[in-house]
Amino acid sequence: MDVPVALVGCGRWGRNHARNLAELGALALVCDSDPHAEVPEGVRRADGFKEVLADPDVRAVVLATPASTHAAMGLAAIQAGKDVLVEKPLALSYDEGRRLVDAAAAAGAVLMVGHVLLYHPAVEALRGLVADGDLGDLRYLYSNRLNLGTVRAAENILWSFAPHDIAVMNALVGAAPVEVAASGGAYLQEGIADVTVTDLLYPGDVRAHIFVSWLHPFKEHRLVVIGDRKMAAFTDTDLEGTLRLYDRGVDIRDGVAVVREAPESAIDVPDAEPMRAELLHFLSCVVERTRPRTDGEEGLEVLRVLEACQRSLDEGGRVVALEDVRA
Image 1 (cartoon, rainbow, N blue to C red):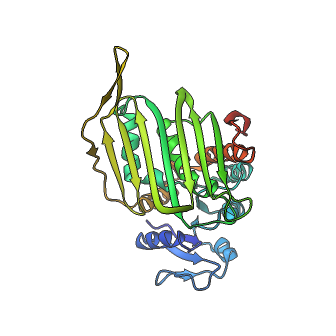
Image 2: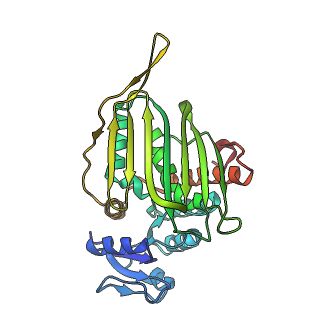
Image 3: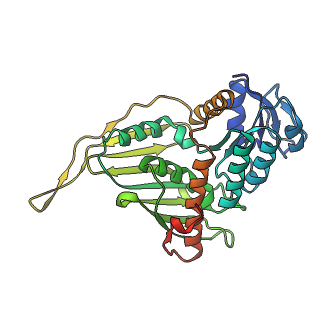
């Protein structure tokens, strides 16, 4: 697509944006504070963010910068007349995110949030299983997003890792949780949680929990969804994922619990890179002036859940109702 895009931030995650945008023929400019950051061959490097904003040929900006910069840089890009894809989280507070969303609406700009898992073909297939009723009524969900490293200083593990899982769970349930409770510990840096466990209650008594940590001996990205008919498990790696369906459960017959087990089955999903799909969707929205699937409002809903979780974390695990967080 003929959409000149500037990439701001070409670090560990930004490099993936750079590769995909270059292969799509959309990468016009790269801006990074590190003069040694790798830039795809033939792509111009900007001297700074101001050059990106002032470039009349740049139609859209992808922000793959630290989360603490998202609000200010996103707002500046929108005010400069650019469409924006900002990596998750949209901002580090609901109020900052609200200003971004309102600014984009006033300017008629496309604002999209990088909730890349919602573009994963296995997650899309899982959403289809839930929507078609293959799992039956949802009972509970849980996710583990664990790794060693990727330690942040500006945001804790909750804000760094959990947005992925909150976005996916909200999409699967079709609603935001009504209340949350979070607990965790800070072992590497004072006041910055390295591990958190969050319990979420969704409408219809659907329950979920999210376990995230960057202080873990091995990498595990797994989401399990339990219905009253069947169960499903999505295991994620860097570029691939597996989705398995389990015709298993427990039935109550004449007051007796009877375990039901059948062979598991693998769900075939397209071999497609989630980030490539995400960027193609963003470029399409820029060209067609349509609303992204993961737009600013969806990002705001995730921020509202995160703020409730953070409030609970700060208050020793107290249950926090979402209605008590700005809507």
